[in-house]
Length: 340
Image (tube, rainbow, N blue to C red):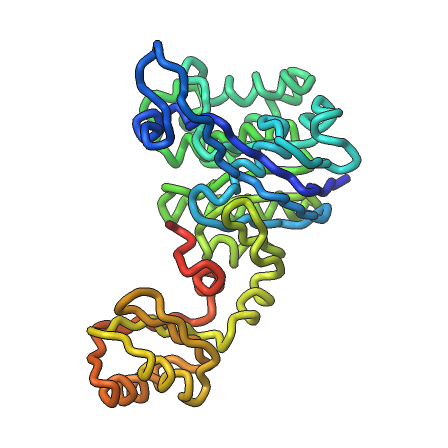
């Protein structure tokens, strides 16, 4: 029986810098001296009243740039990160009140592989199955099937030294599926993978979903989200800024096409002229020389843009045209790229 996810007004505030950011912490009142205490308490808001519902049996995507709150959301609903406020449920189980029940229902693939290099690929799978009470025969059967499906059979009895990043990612996903969880969490599963491995991963995700399983994946790969997800939430600064199917989200863009322009100068006269062009729904100045034009057409609009610029005594330096996409939707809401 597939299970869903529900969160209600999740907040997560970190009050210390990440360990790897110690050098950057000086600007917020932290000293590198072990004898000194922090002079100022910092607060990093990772989740800001985040409420979501993921239906049982769907593939749901969380999109956003680095630091948007995607991994923190996954950490909370998989019992690894305690929220500052709010609640989360996996199926009928409250995540922090029934952690054991929740862990039996979920499989988690972290953003970075955390595999034991002292074990072989096969041992990693069979040991994981033992944690969930699978019999020796069942562990052996499932491990063989997963090693074959993830194309790791020829390396099954080898230690992980010498495994490529793609092989370790495939093994991480196989491990998460070893106990046949009802809900699979994939945190940026295709980051750093070659195109062939990425397509293999997509096929496996679709197969698992075809068995009635629920899948939540975080990504900033718009192609991946478009190809796999039935619904998507785009988040930034710990908040949901857009929610819907990929088609619905792309249709919500004003005009659809985005024409990104660079001029040698930008004036209010030119901006007003661009807004009067047929098919243009919105014009935004992005900086001293940049302008974003949202319109219902792309290439055919460029000569008219050049005429407006010439009349305003400005020269076009660069033009980039994008068709309706999730990337453009994010740019519309935040003014920056999903990958930033």
